[in-house]
Structures are given as structure tokens and as C-alpha cells.
Amino acid sequence: MKNVPDQPLDIVRKGLQTYADRGIFSGFDEVKTRNGRRTFRFVWQGSRPLDFDVDSERGVLRFNKLLPNVPLHSSLYVDLNRFVTTRSDPRIPKHRRVDARRATVSCTNRAGNVSIALSVKNNQYEYGLKKLVNLVHEVFVQL
Image (cartoon, rainbow, N blue to C red; front, side, top):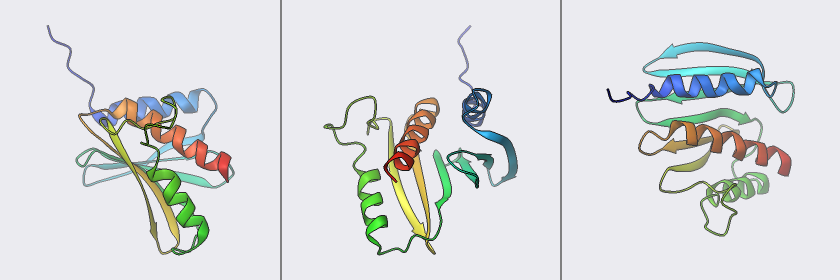
């Protein structure tokens, strides 16, 4: 019998729960469902709850409103956007690089709220989750 792959949402849920079980995230909760999307909320890297959105229909994982109050044309946002979009550069060490064949990352700023997203390719949800969490960790270390 052929193994049926886990559903994307289950893969992400289990991965996030593993981070919570290890004490990396606290207050981990699944907070809402709509249009095939799911949001998880937890505290990490500070005291403000973070929202992690999963859109399994589009294959997108997103730290929504990760950084508040960052003006669109500020040097902080320009540098952050450059940092995020260059994570697929072959010169980046493999353990820190996002393999462009498996996922792409992006940074958006809406009304001063910065979100960082990763779009998975070929159902690479486990890989994508790990890379996105590691990338956001790097962002916080750099800040």
C-alpha cells in the first residue's frame, strides 16, 4: 500500500506544535479558519503574539504583521526586503539558504506592517516551515 502524504495543514500544525513542545513558542493556539486558511498564534522573540497564516490552497506560509510601524520607504524596510529576497542566493550557506526549487520568500509592507511569506513548491510544507522559521529567527537576530 502506498503511503498517502499528510495534508499540508496537518504537516504545518505538527511542525509548529513541535516548536511549542520544545519551548520555542509559548501560548500556541490555532485561532481561526476561513477560505482554506488557518491562523496559528503564539509568542516568540518577545512578548507580542505573532500570527502565522497557512493558505494551503495557494501554498503560502506567512508571518503576518511580523514587524509593526515600519514605514514603506524607510531604510529598515529596504534593507529587510533585500535581506529576505536574497535568501535564495547560492552564495548563502546551504543550511541558511532557501532552495528556489522548493520555495520562494517575500517581504511585504501594508500600512507599515511587515509580513514575511514563503510560497512552497511541490508540497514542500515541512521544508518551507523550517526555512521560514529559521529566516524569521535570522531577521530578529539581525535586528
